[in-house]
Amino acid sequence: MRAVARRWLALHAEIQAHEQELDRMVRCRAPALMASHGISTITVAEMLILVRDNPERIKSEAALAKMYGVCPIPASSGKTIRMRLNRGGNRQANASIYRVAIVRMRDDEKTKVYATRRTAEGKTRREIVRCIKRYIIREIYRHLCAPPDLLRAD
Image 1 (tube, rainbow, N blue to C red):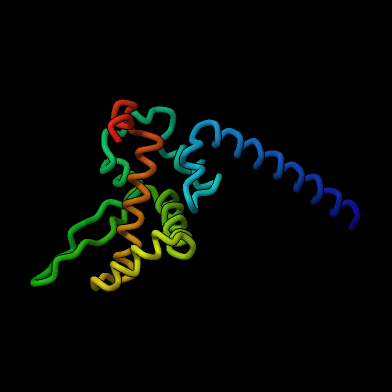
Image 2: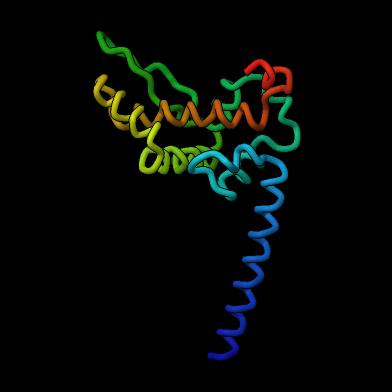
């Protein structure tokens, strides 16, 4: 039992060292994104993996949304006009965006107000989450992919 406990402690210390190094690397690459509400080190690391070292290849926020599987698809029929989520794209990245959206809906005051307003407009929770995910993609694009001249215009 002692040998197992020592092994567990060694592995735990190694995991903490790797997490600290990952946090340092992510903060160096995307400090503004790390400051955003609800976005953790692992989430930003997943985003950086998807964007990779060449963010210039992503030409627009819509292209990034398609890569993440967050772009809306028309799902209208008859008199109703609505959108639904794309089931394509990178599913792990989409799941990380979903987690950020849920954290923001639970803890962030601005997002709570937005969700309440959209609920009053008749939107379902699923549609509200879709809209919040798209907003998060805009934020990611601004921090990771947008050309410097586009950032100065904001």
